[in-house]
Image (cartoon, rainbow, N blue to C red; front, top):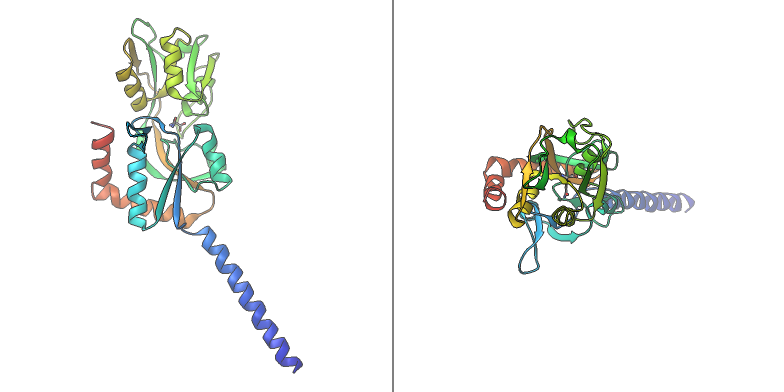
Length: 259
Ligand code: GLN
């Protein structure tokens, strides 16, 4: 009797362990729903459209990835600087926000393969004589808080290639890029440092401004994912690769970015 009981107990214990092991694995693997964090203030990658819907290249790309993975998708709009923390606290399980792969961010998150190459530019008033990033020294420069443009203006490394280019900048941080651009228009800051394509959108929509390109290093947009979920990174990379190879990513670029 005693022996039977022991065996039975051992069986229950083994089953419990197996079950626990399973649920742990489930949590770590592919989620049933991809909850994508973004900051819909970064056209053409993400923005709120005329129907108050969040759209843009990143959104369309993530929807296609979710469709191919046969999982649901939800988009959560938040401040750019909150995205990494939300990924860490599991409020979201992916970030698609024109986010540059960056060593400092990689301490907290993992990144997919890159889906877009960008660089920082300056937006200035049309009559500005500014030509080089180094000339920003001593100037008031508007940036979106927590971005690589913020890091550049602050004199830090960022991305995988950018070394500090300028020191001694009076950095003014704004929650949205467009706020920085408005401040530039109103005579507040002397320049805005921001990613090239959004800069082009802002200049297109605001008369009296121009873009100045200096030799900023390339930076690579990647999807940020929870740290340590190798399976998810692999799966996302598989879908990205297929979408590069079958022309889907190029089609989305033509539709949203190079219109
Ligand atoms: N590429 C920049 C970064 O990763 C800006 C992204 C953004 O403002 N959405 O910091």
